[in-house]
Image: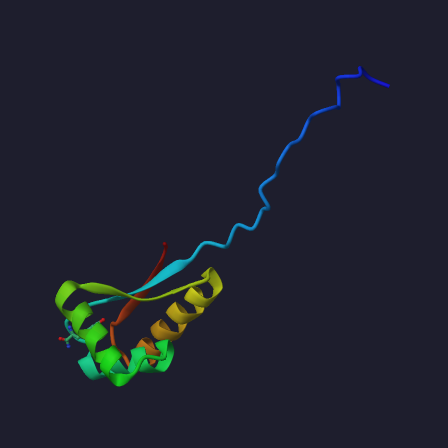
Length: 102
Ligand code: TYC
């Protein structure tokens, strides 16, 4: 069935489809009211930073207005944001945490 030429010498190479899921940056935003020590505690507690790392990132946010505090899958990033926002709200601090696609 079909012409002699129809399905000879045809090689279609397919790229193995191993696209990784998109990553999301979790951002911490500066404000005038949240105590510095609270932000340091947040970074230690939810992002596994040492005190020194946490202090450094906190100062970056304080000076520059915001900083990336981690890069995660969508689900993990969402969880981090929710944990930080909930912790801040429970302590009545206006600290803001958001995520954006990398
Ligand atoms: N700017 C705050 C202060 O002077 C400290 C601060 C740092 C607040 C980082 C939020 O994400 C933040 N107390």
